Amino acid sequence: MSLHEAFWSASLQEWKQGYIEQGEHFMCLLCGEQVEKGIIYPVEGVLYEASRFMRHHIEAAHGSVFTHLSQLDKRLTGLSDHQVNLLRLFYQGKTDAEVQNEMGIGSASTIRNHRFALKEKERQAKVFLVMMELLHEADKNQSSNDAKSSKQKNTSKDGDAAEYAAIVKRLLPNGLSGRLERFPRKQKHKLILLEEISKKFELDRFYTEREVNEILEGLYDDYVTLRRYLVDVGLMDRQADGSQYWRIAVENEGEERGAQQMNRKQELKQMYKEVETDAGVYQIKNKQNEKVFIASTNNLKTINGRKFMLQHGSHPNRELQKDWDKYGPDAFEIEVLEKVEKKDHPYFDGKDALEKLEDKWMKKLAPYGDRGYHVQKDPS
Image 1: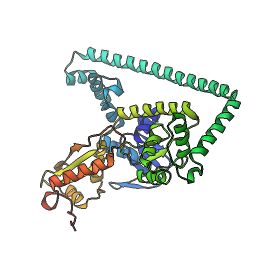
Image 2: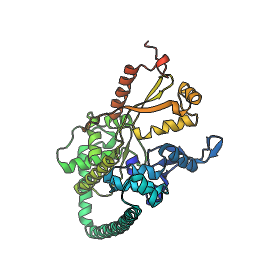
Image 3: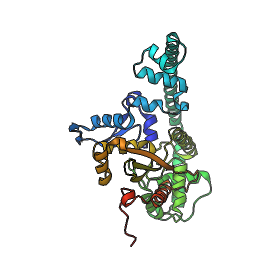
Image 4: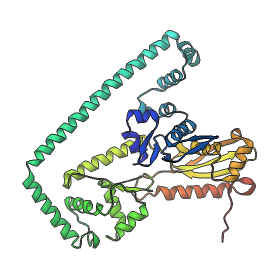
């Protein structure tokens, strides 16, 4: 499950704790960091089991869940900047008089009015949540009624199943082990064919783009088109940078299923845009000697995690770690150098764009020897 899906499908309790449990891992809902269960993590002489270490990570990398949520775009929080600032001060335990003095507004009674307005907003949010829960239950009841109605159409379904099998046999006479000679033009035939092809991928398994290409290339020469169609119709989904693909389980068949999956795909895309993360290149600079360390990440919001690693002596660059231990954290600054410019077309390769951007800055800053913490590779 991708970070944006996990974030929006989490319960209120999971949001409050800031992480979810996924199989053998715990996953941070704020940055996607994962820790493995069953491992003891040492931090400054203290041993933490996985869930406690995840809470420590959230505190070290993000400050708190409250801090992270308060930094979200106002489109997501529904709060004005003024309201967010008030909430932050209240969260810090400030009295009304202290809040009034710090914000320089009105009087202590004005702050009390603001508290009342926020309480009113909380009550409104509760009413809205209950209404949405009831709406979801109504949708489930409607789905149940639709299922009952569909049972009355068994004869029609049997005919649809026979038609499905006939179309698959015509397009893939040798089954999924054979070759697809042509791609159908009719939308209904496309959906049936794509649903059959999706069965070449296992459920509950992640694939790299290369693995997807290899599987599809064995079926059809234009495997890129097949891959794009599988994603577009909602039979497969992928990480925004194309690093992972996975099959989506579907229950309905035919054009109606295709339309429903397309709607779901658009919904997930919108969710992703709302919590969209930026990939880019950053530097960790030693202000004492001007040496820099250059790195890239798919999520710039996680660069504080690198600081977390340095603070606990676990950064993979030993020279950087040595100087950090020597000069202390105040001698260093972390700066974003450039973000990846995303392009809205199906062939955009975010991973490749990130690699090229990192290469650009490595050439520009040449962080080797006295200028940085990297070891220059032998050109031969």
